[in-house]
Figure 1 (tube, helix red, strand yellow):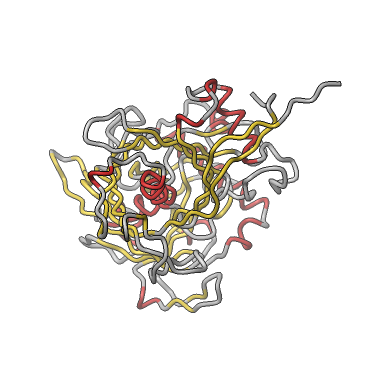
Figure 2: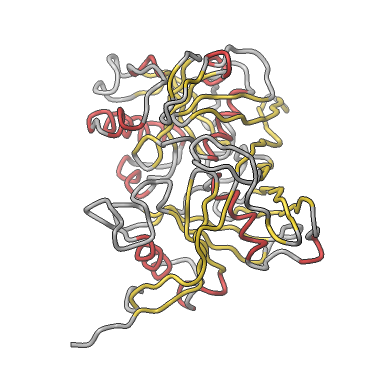
Length: 399
């Protein structure tokens, strides 16, 4: 019996924000995986260790959560006035597919740092000491992200005193600007695909009595469906164990997600949602109250504007997805959305919200242009750090 030897591929394992992923330069991938398709998907699934019926990722680099089952490809940019193209794949844990339908805002931070580490940014644009401006083309959603990466002695500065709730140790602050985050492409046209700030969303009776749920559906950063926590029996202070150990609750959230995806025009049939687990995100909001975060730290109502909990890949996220934070900041800036109302209503250019691991501030400036809401930029701070670099190995017959 013959056995295929393992092959090794240059790779870097990075934390970005509250996520981790395996990063590759496009040129380092096997030739058959340098183009989109089945070979690339099979490679990434094997790198992560999916599909895994044990939901443990023992035989791969993944961590069996939506925050740690990620692969990224970077290359010199094909778009004028950009440094790198950044392509993100969300690897399903228990099913054989990779979702390419959206971005990871947390790993966008690491993309800026990795672009410098990997020699993909023109050296002439990098300061010896200061802040490097890395212009990223987010290829999944065709958007520009600007990463402001600190540089010391010509190298990315990774250590520092910037603290990010959901990350154990402090690091160097990286400021991200998401340029024109509201979608104007082919995913629905408007920032509000239904044309409304708040909709009556038809959902199964198992979700809510009467089968109708108030919802704000927005495409900014990532398509997101916001509902009121109180409308579905929650307070907005829940930690992930309370949701993720309740199979019936997860079924109800998935039903809301499918209903929202249909209403937003992201899918045409409910069955299509099985192959689009990464988007849309589901989040529930509530006015601020004193509560305790997952680390045991007390968060005072006076220190936040609202509470938000969000689900990713069918589970409550331990902190907050970066792209969902963009959606939160954008929706909070627009008077009348459920997010804005939970924060107290009125005009605002920034919001600090409570999530399971603590708090996060995100800024966004919204304006109406010819009756349509637009947001030119959303800003937030994250951090990133290289955890390991070298080669990742996979069996040679994987693809």
